[in-house]
Amino acid sequence: AYIDPKEQKEFLARLTEAEDWLYEEGEDASHDAYIEKVSGLKATGEPIVERYREDKERPKAARELRDAVSQWADRATSQEERYSHITSEERQKIIDRIEKVQEWLDEKLEKQSTKSKWDAPVVFANEIRKQRDELVYFATPIMSRPKPAPAPVPKIDETADADVEVESPKSEGEPKGNTEQMDVD
Image (cartoon, rainbow, N blue to C red; front, side, top):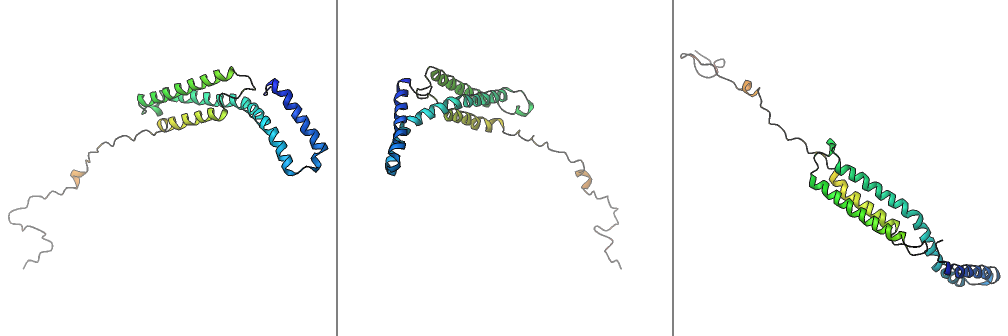
């Protein structure tokens, strides 16, 4: 399914020819002859294998991206207390990015759906995963920023007045200062 039917017969013939060569002349062939035969087959075979792998991986990658889009959209629109400090402008940046990524994915998958399995892929699974990673790297710092600590409320220290020593009024005849250490003769 991953090779053009017109090319399939030719490729099968080349594979059969290589197999026959291997059993008939391959024993006496040089290392370079093997490399040449394998290289010629790989030129046709590797793109077939790549198209097969992409056809299997692309839906998984698209599902991962859609899951990420859904998760970040939920967080950006959440009214949970843990996100209450995130401004509406910051949330809108995430939503805009999500819309852009979603449009990109829909466009690429639509183009891919018009292609045959043997055509070169329009979008690769690694490109889809890269979009997912970029969305995560964009949104994570915004939505995971911790809530700012509440501003400290200035405390009125009621004990401050108690620490201040108030001198009691002295009678007129009393000496000023510390009388315990005075030596009076």
